Length: 83
Image 1: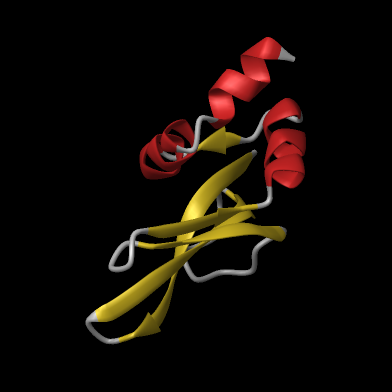
Image 2: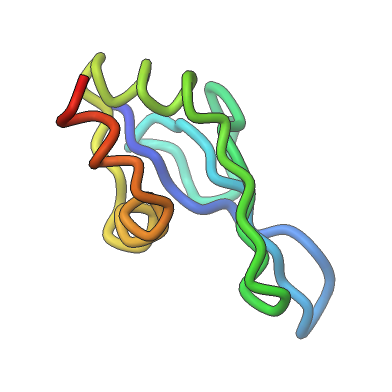
């Protein structure tokens, strides 16, 4: 099973997170299937590769709670229901 999850990057006390599609059996810093965006909580910036995220969601990928909140703030689920 594939999940959309956050992968920590950056330096100490200055974390940024990549949003990745990853197998559920992999650890947090493990090998990902594809990078689909990033999230910087300090600058409150988000970049999402929407077509790739929608592809993984259609194939049955489950976002974690935090990634789900990020996608909801970006109004990604409104696009998905209207299509």
